[in-house]
View 1 (spheres, rainbow, N blue to C red):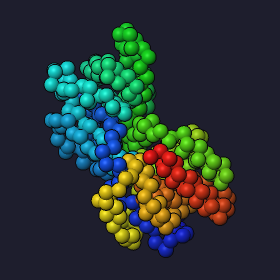
View 2 (view 1 turned 135 degrees about the horizontal axis):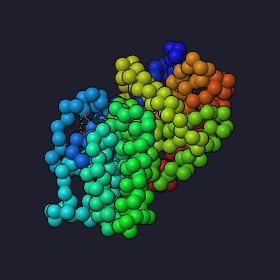
View 3 (view 1 turned 60 degrees about the vertical axis):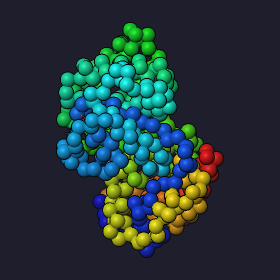
View 4 (view 1 turned 120 degrees about the horizontal axis):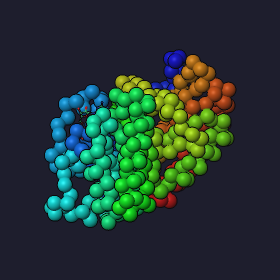
Length: 357
Ligand SMILES: Nc1nc2c(ncn2[C@@H]2O[C@H](COP(=O)(O)OP(=O)(O)OP(=O)(O)O)[C@@H](O)[C@H]2O)c(=O)[nH]1
C-alpha cells in the first residue's frame, strides 16, 4: 500500500466523528431494541464491548460474567438499545414481564459458542423462539454461531449445517415452521462480527431500499466498483450498493476507517464541540440527524491508492456517516464528476432522513 495522499479538499483531515457528542434524538422516541442472549460465556458481552466500545478482543478475556440484564443505549447514526442477558436467566420463572421485554424488540441475537458443546444452547434457543412468537411474531431472529476463529473452514460449515438442521426440524415438529431465522458465523477476532451486526441493523432500517438505490446510482454514474455507507463509530455498514459484498472489500474499507480515525485523533483540528447540540431541547430524529449543523460540515475526504491499481476514497457524509468507495485508478481520474455526484448523494441522504422523521 502506498502512503495515503493528503486529503484533497482539506489541509488536514477532520475528526470524522469521534470528537462529537452523542447524536441528538427525539425525546421519548422509542429506540429499536436488540436482545443479546445465549448460554453463559458464549461471548455476548464481548460482542457488545468490541462492536460498540472498541474494546480490543483480547481484553474480553477479563470481562466478568453478567449477572443482571444490562440495558445499554447505543448512540450511533441510529439510536438503539442493546440488552445483554445473563446466560443463566430463565424467563419462565414468572418474575419477568415477557410482553414488555419482547413486544417491541427489533431483533433477537442468539449467541452460540461453536467451540463448545451446543445442544443445550440449541434447546434454549428453540424455547426462546417459541416464547417470543407469542409476543412478537415479526421479530428478526439472528443466530450468531460464534467463536469460529478456532475452527477449520470445513468444521465451521458442518457446525452451521448441523445447527440449521436441528433448529429447522425442531421448530417444524412443534408447528413453528414459518419462523425465519438468519445464521451468521462470527468471531470478535476478525471482521465477521461487524459484518453480522451490519446485516442485523440494516434490517431495522426502513430507509434501506432507498439508500441502496442511491448508492446504485452513485456507483453507476462514477464507475465505482463498490460503495459502502459506514457508521463511523461502530464500523457497521448501514448500506451498500447491490453488487455482492466480498469480505475483502468490506475488510479493507473497515480498516481504512480505523486508519483515518487514528490519523484524525492525532492530527485533526478541533471543529468545536457540537455536543452542546444534544443538550438543547430540540425535536430531532433518532435516525440520521437532520440538524443543519450536522449536515453542513465542510467536506472532508481522504484517498488511498492501493498497489493493485485500485483507489479507496472516503468522504464524510455527516458527523456519523462516511461513504467509502473502491474504484479503479482510471475512474478516479474524473474527480470532478465524483465530487459532484457525491454531493448530490449527500443532499439526497439528507432529504431521505428528513422524510422519515
Ligand atoms: N475465541 C474466541 N473467544 C471469544 C470470542 N468472543 C468471546 N470470547 C471469549 O469468551 C469468553 C466469555 O465471553 P463473555 O463475553 O464474558 O460471555 P457472556 O456470554 O457475556 O457470558 P455471561 O456474562 O456469563 O452470560 C471470554 O473469555 C471471551 O474472551 C470469540 O469470538 N472467539
